[in-house]
Image 1 (cartoon, helix red, strand yellow):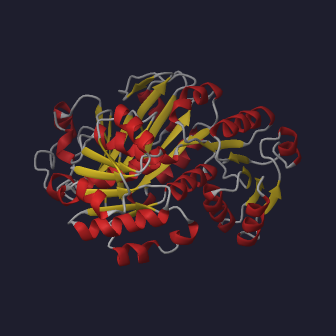
Image 2: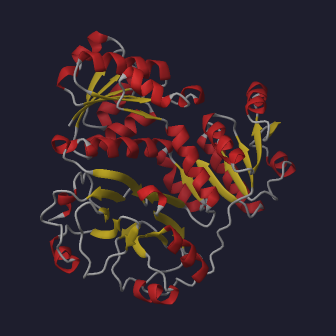
Image 3: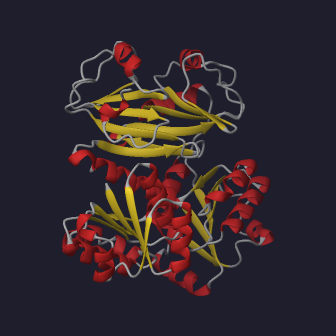
Length: 452
């Protein structure tokens, strides 16, 4: 597909990289010539210097020949206007990034009135991911399929009974119908077979029905009670969305923000939260605000290094679940060494959402990706497909189908109505089943693409 991206900031650059890696032709528009040049040197894109809301710039980008237009500039208003002009200039799908909480309440209205195909909000999506982890503090990540009936989650083996067992022994020991579909051990990532032996410090990805997750934790004596109190540093957009979610669950929320004006605004919007004017990087101040007593600590300042330092300090002085957000992916190695509980990357979330949408539009609208997640340093993709006209796959025992799959790929789960099937060799995919695939391959857009 041919895509146009307006804006080559952190999100735009990551998105361009994702789409190019998936095999799409990408044009990037930005009015910052230096930033545009840097992206063009790093990624195989067509750079165009100009304003994404200028019709002449869009003509230069040959907008009429493009399939999808994505506006992710720093300005919500420019993104909406750019999409409106692009939609009027050609038959094209339009996606706008809109971050302002005021606009987030009008998403459906804006989509309808402006003819947008999709509105994305990375900050809101990042807040939701943090919120889910606060509901399940034992995990480093959790996502869902089929309306929440099926989950995929990451847990780090740290003295659990799983250490030293192979996957067959683990299943027998827990009595739970779960599938360990991926494992990260230091710098290596595996899609494991049944004789794969787990070790301490492995991070494992598991697919199962929601109720099986609870039984699995109980069998391994993993404590997973939702955090009841949370200390947040930084009162930006992600903190705004997260506080809203936590207050609706009647959680105790304390926000530390250095900007007095922001403090006043947050206090007005969230009367149930306690907003403190102060420096969230001051260690003594954080202790005074209860860091060593809260059940969760979430540094969300706009500076990655401050978030990492605060998170590391919290791990040393408290038992809180520590989650932070990071914008710079080049800090990954540092973060891994520090072993912060969970790190959220808003630009990765945004890229995954758009990659999922683009794949669903592929193959002359024949792509059938329902859901897409990237796990374990983005080296594993977990995709949900709807089985429709895949005659080479439907009604074939998986014992036979498995021999025809691409390498480094497994069928992790079949969802049939209300039923969640962790498949064996005797199971078959039927028409209208939802099928969850775990793979190291990139760019899988349709269920039949899993065949070698």
